[in-house]
Length: 389
Image (cartoon, rainbow, N blue to C red; front, side, top):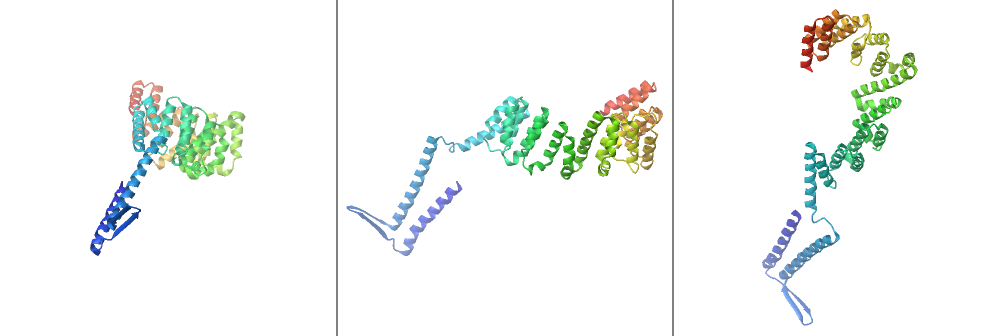
């Protein structure tokens, strides 16, 4: 529309110049065309106007021919704007229907918007709706199509892999992620999902091999992944060869891995699962002799020993340095309770809940009161814990 206005303005300016110029000069001039007995005589201005009108008529005629040709060949260009609006309307209605939980209606609208220009977002939503309706093949087909859009490739493959994982197909999920190019494969969601697929399929060694490269991208999130991989490896070893083989394997690990907090946490957890609480306590106390480690501290609660003197001594030393840390009191209370030292457990837990109440500590205080046959007190703690849950 803007271009047409510019053209019209230029034509008007040209006509004005043709009309004004001869008047300024004082000589309008004339043109004589003779074809046998047919003679045309006109001024220069009339000729210019006639030529401009002829060009305009030719342009309009070409446009009309183009429209007729479009009708005859089935082109939808004439109705393109109308179709685009219809697809947009279907897309937005599909989103609204999906938000309302009307999956069948949402699927109908999204299917109507598939040819729209939504940069693949419509395909992602249509795939999710198809999956929710149990049509996994259609969902996979739509996601394959969505991955053709550059900005949509990673979301499409991640969504596809998650769907396959939920169907307990980690190998197929890995294959879907492997279709991404080298740059796309380095994105954090892709690495996290790939690690989950490897873990589900028991490929612990592959995770450990890739971890040095993944740590740069995952950063803090690499710690639980490393712990999970190490735990899987230790669990596999212990189940096949026994606890002694696990201890020997640990001793033969490189020094760097034995000092890695994720590996240490996984090793302690596996020792506890194997019933080797004494060995687990020795590791927890030795590795935290210079201060508490967040990844190791929670395992104190899992210790089951008749005389956890080393653990109690360490926890009490932490409390002396920081008497306002409720977590230290809570850990001490759990260790004492598991050792059946109810008096120490109760004192420690009461201090912990005084600093900050948690359902876990209140529930443990209730169990202590039950063992002491104080049912009224136990009921009070149970009610408090329910209020916090």
